[in-house]
Image (tube, rainbow, N blue to C red; front, side, top):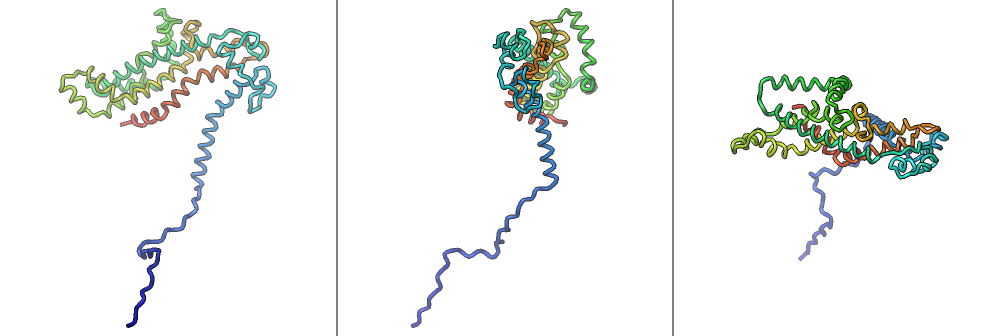
Length: 318
């Protein structure tokens, strides 16, 4: 009897002929359009951060040595003296030795004034703008759309055109060199804030409000118990944007708040230029003060930047 020997099975399974073999990896090529876009983005970023780098370089330089090498990208005669002059920890002799004026700087008082003014403007503007935006988005009353159109046209009026009437009114009320005089023109509402919140309120389902009103809630209770909690993200975003704008405001506080008791930090930065020593302006101290003044707004934007961008995209035109 003849034995038939079967061939040994292969240890590797045979590839299914119906399964296509993987295509060879192709080398990824960079398209010219993408390359140009990346170059343009890099140039924009460079143009954005270059002033901050130059400010930091100047703020870390000795003001007397600064003019010996004005084109150097690195600090000239590196020192923390400008920041010490800004914070008031440097003595008069030390400030004058580094090219400062030696005048006393009430930095912490100016910082306190900026915080008080910015917080008051933010609280009042967001509160009243939210109620006005809810009235434009939900309440039905004659001429609502026409009044809202008038509010939108106010966005096209340059603020400098309203400075003189506002100044005359504040002076007539006797509010010059006071916190209410600085805060009053920005306290109640702005067209941008109303438009920003109205667009979000329009996207909220009416069924939620109708259910609340069936349970006996009125407009005020519905607004504070239903609408405000649901609108927490855009309200926080508006608070941040309003605070930053109030913090950076310069012309109006300078016009009505020249007294040192209410002088804000942005106006006080001019004191570094006006208090000019014999060698020239204290540019190192001025740049150090500008950096210190920008720290609060920079921290806010770094912490809530993504939330701000998402809220602005969500509250677009509907």
